[in-house]
Length: 250
Image 1 (cartoon, rainbow, N blue to C red):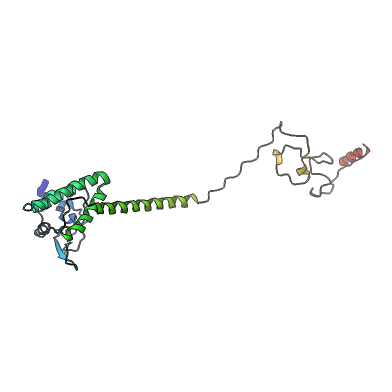
Image 2: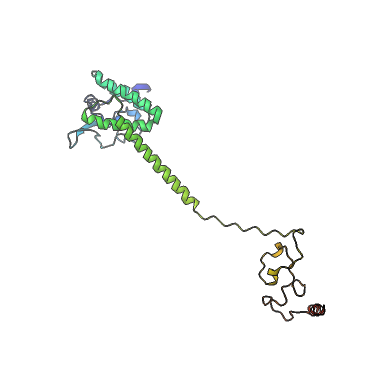
């Protein structure tokens, strides 16, 4: 079975609701196949209306199910042309209200997306219908409130994203090992003795441009007379003593 014959006709309670101008949720008027299977478990769901504590009408499902969200502009238009407008065939003024609202919905869907347009429709009907006011004209107050709310939500999402990025950036990064010091080139080397080496505090190692040799004996160890030089069984060798004697004669 294809086409319109697959859809069940609107119930009497739904038609009565539309004709009395009390339909506040388009989801209740969607044709049977436009409703997602998970939304209703019962085979048939009757839509009616009740009077709330303030004397206003409220659309309800007899099983207590909330109205499903209209998934797209095309389904919204199908609901309008297949259910709402036929129910208002004897009420041309009411038909005009819905047709003008459909034009607003198309413009909002193009400009702001379907979610925004659907929320505008829900807020408009819920604020106008209980007061028996028309909804053919664009409600600037509802639009302003919606745009302000959207801006706040966008700012909150941006703030959360920035906070997440900041938390990620404060994570300590692993410390990379420092590169070994380069050896001093032959051209940079000097014949001058390294005073820091003889004093036992040179940390430059092979990168040092000065000679690491004893200022007393010339051997490759710290100053023989330095108190920082490591002790050994024979600190001053015979060669060192001979050099000291030659230096004293000179």
